[in-house]
Amino acid sequence: MCRPVGPINIEGVIKSAVWHPESFIRGIPMMSGTLGVDRTIPAHYMVQLESIVVSDSEDYRRLLLNSGDVISLSHAEDDGFLKAGMKIRISGLMQLGDEGGYDTFFDKIEIL
Image (cartoon, rainbow, N blue to C red; front, side, top):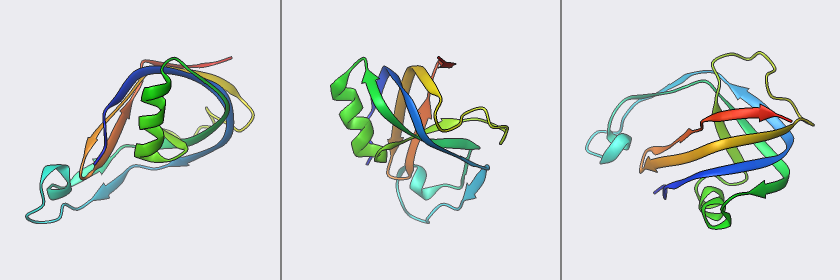
């Protein structure tokens, strides 16, 4: 179960950034929430940060509980927008979900 996070602001240096294309997951019959329905996961980067500064440490702890030490950031193309070594700021990050997983939303990403 995913606990709600945010909105928070996170700043840090990208340790790794791996892009994943859109994918489709079949629902599991008779399961509750999104786990029971077919769904599409949008294309996204999975970003691991270091030297992190956050606006709300309690929400950041919930983010870590939900998704480990990586953050999913929707991005439609594998265009190298985010790369290891970049310092970034993610504004308005929110994470919502249920038994079937979580969605991450943000207002903007700035490369510093």
